Image (cartoon, rainbow, N blue to C red; front, side, top):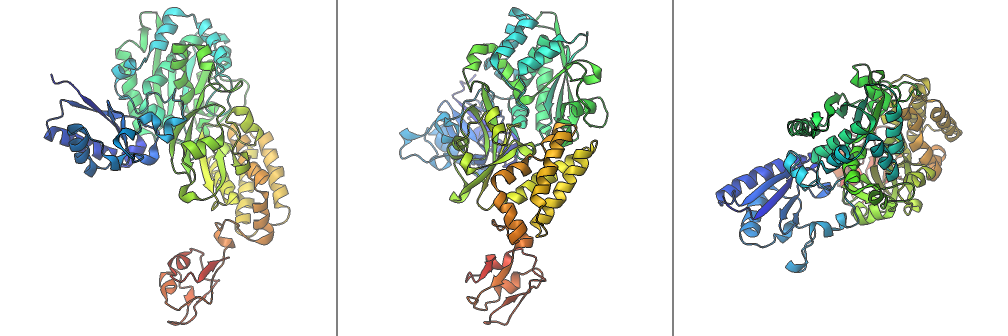
Length: 596
């Protein structure tokens, strides 16, 4: 058997697959076979590396060379130049070096340099379909230690020492949650993983499920042992087909190896797992609505108490954590609570995975220690704003979060600091906005989402969000009136206080935070009938200045025939017909069309 002398890791997570990674993989298979290298070079499909902006991504070991935006037509050159001749294909590097000696390793690339990858440690580095590779990366060591050396009570106490807070939104202490469920009487309990990731711009859970599914299974099994549960459910939205396929494969592998199912590792502990595919309702991310959906009912929240730890799935005590929370557990029980608690801040321990999206150069996933600043994430890891435009705001926490301005860029990323600033950690979505963004329009966008996703059960959310959306729509269309801002604030406070579940209670957050930091934009829309960012089309006017040479290009591209004028003569825009599309301004070679 030929000695394997190189490993080619190809990201086939959803992001890279959408960019053509499967075609790259197929071309590698063909080229290696054609060069008789198929026995000497191993091809490994991995999950998401995190650096989505550079996909499809290829890493070649033992050198650790990191190639970005690899296309099928690049593969022959990589095989010939790198794998056969031992030379770097510099044009495909993330950053072209001055000399071959300066080729950055995977960890030295600026996107990864400030990250601390605990949860994402295996993503992009192992084959997620291989139990052997997960075990080779210390997988299931935590479960073995727990089952063979610790009592359930000791596991709960260890979790409390970590200071780990739930990564799904509210940040409730995980150890306390486990303690409450463990203390609830009854012979039947459930462990539930909330993988119903629905925030716009969020893909942390999906990437973890696709890139390291066994970590979630191991974390859930440890939780089951701690609280006395013998059964668990992973509630994952059906829009994540790759994640579901890899989870099903991982469960089957773990069962066959005796790591799930009956009498795990010969200890007498039984734990079985099921997957429930959700239909994509955002409200099912709320734990009581999620449990109703698993039971086959309509996903609608119910009042609490009783809390799930006392009366949860099928009225049995249940513990619910999200994907990222469970992914922390194997590491914690490998290294111990004290080691884990060394990372982060006093009240926010460990790391947090963020999905970087929006007007940022390096979109992707970043795992950073709690306490890092927003500036470091956006400008050092994220590479700053696209086209060197000015940073304006960042939406953190999804529809439930808030928009923070540039004056708060040095805010530490931890639960309490973000809440004090008018935002929240949420699940980790981070949407960056530049100077061309209208903050009133942003508030309308997120409110439109939460209003559409409201289950309609309680009046404050069902009716209140609709009224707020109507007011925001009127403001962006130039129909805003004096007193609207005060009405919005009053309504927002009432909805937060009266809504049944977290969806309604946090729906006003984008409005309250934009009013807090960008009130002048609301006032400009209402009193001046202007959109400072030039986004709200109803408040725009396009006019043709004396610089017009009468070339007629604007007239040709206007989709509604709103422009009139003779060749070589001054043209005119009929404002009653103009739909504010901006096509005329874009095409004018003389810059004679201005937007006011």
